[in-house]
Amino acid sequence: MHTAFASLMATLGVPAPQLQGGDLPSLSPIDGQTLAQVHTTPLPEVADAAARAHAAYLRWRVVPAPQRGELVRLLGDELRAAKASLGELVTLEVGKVSSEGLGEVQEMIDICDFAVGLSRQLHGLSIASERPGHRMMETWHPLGVVGVITAFNFPVAVWAWNAALALVCGDAVIWKPSEKAPLSALAVQALFDRACQRFGQPELTHHLSQVLLGLADVGQALVDQPAVALVSATGSTRMGRAVGQRVAARFGRSLLELGGNNAIVVAPSADLDMAVRAVAFAAAGTAGQRCTSARRLIVHSCIHAELLARLKIAYASFKIAAPDAPGTLLGPLIDQAAFETMQAALAQARQEGGTVTGGERVLQEQYPQAFYVSAALVDMPAQTAVVHAETFAPILYVLTYETLEQAIALNNGVTQGLSSAIFTTDLREAETFMAAQGSDCGITNVNIGTSGAEIGGAFGGEKETGGGRESGSDAWKAYMRRATNTINYSSALPLAQGVRFDI
Image 1 (tube, rainbow, N blue to C red):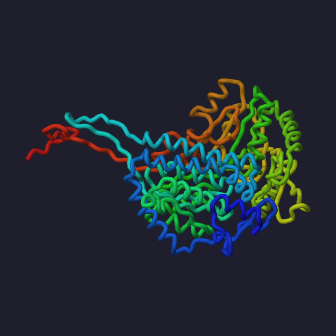
Image 2 (image 1 turned 120 degrees about the horizontal axis):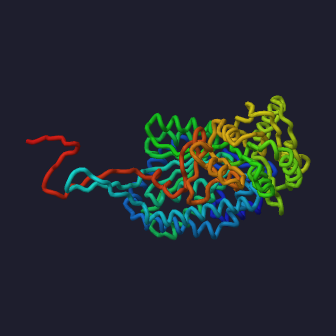
Image 3 (image 1 turned 60 degrees about the vertical axis):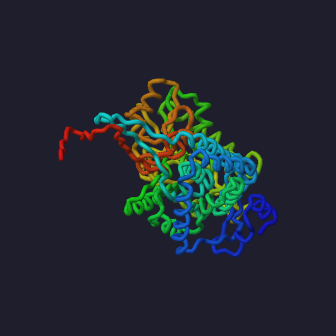
């Protein structure tokens, strides 16, 4: 193990034995080298973990919610103290440029702050009753064990979106991270353990959060556990479809936030300077591997040539380098499979009439075992088959439109529905795009690109991208069960709907 890496993991609190001698290699996309050999969870132990988590939930659910919030506050403090180290690990393990790695940790801190506030707001409503002398109300109670399955592109923040809310809601958490990002999960669990130590009540926090490492079979075993009341999963639509169906088969709950084939519309009135910057970041940030990455650019025909020319200049200026190098804007793809998938998509685009600029492998001599690419601009004649496909890579398909109705139809004309945006200074266009007849995506933005909602704004998708909502102001309800209570404080027993039953 490299000395600097060993020191980093020690700083984060991960014991060396967890990183050595295991059956799952953790490779850095920066240079393709092995960082560690972690130990996968044997399948029979998944059920044991679920049983431990359920026992932890039974203890945790009776703790007052504001006290549960105190644990999450302490977790936020640990994340603040470890921000630089954890951000560095994210960069090292999944190839995010340094500012994005740090930004992801900041997102974890933000959701902790948000969840602490929510811990005093988990309340229901009074409901009008037709029966005199009765009061009806809704109440919310802890749900149970929450299984969290995360993808490589957000190796730590997604866990926090779920865990911070689940913990204040009175639930226990089991985390199955991507097999491409086990180290980040081990580090976060170590930081959570530190928070638990500061919390000072080990009888309450024991097994409250657990990490299961492994491939898809471990995730499948977690999904199938009857004790896991809610499965929250992020990743590809293919994965989400498999998870959703298996959870539904046992009448469990699922919260899915899946990859999107996201679009940006650029109208004639748009501020093009702003649009170019936003489009470039949305399409190429994290090497186009975010769930909110822009994959389609829908441009009015009258500005198509100008915008495409500007984007080519911007793309040519991207510094492609190791993600921890100063000024890097485009780091590596996660692995060879991602590169091959990208090249197959570009080949199909050419076959379907597209003109491709960029998209080739670079830095191969310097990093023969890593996969750096230039961002690809693909001018397409129409929204062909390849444009409908989900590809995690810096590919931007450029389409043209004549009317806003056509632009909306193109935006909505794919099976994914995570995020969308329009650049316009025309109020009517902006409002129409956000209206019922506008974008059918879970996130619809104006003059900001396809960014996900910030903490406090519900984040999730529609159609094939899931329909679940995480981190928003009412997202806590997904982690709780609702009950309706009717209290009779009178001396009579009137029945509803005029029913009579006199004995």
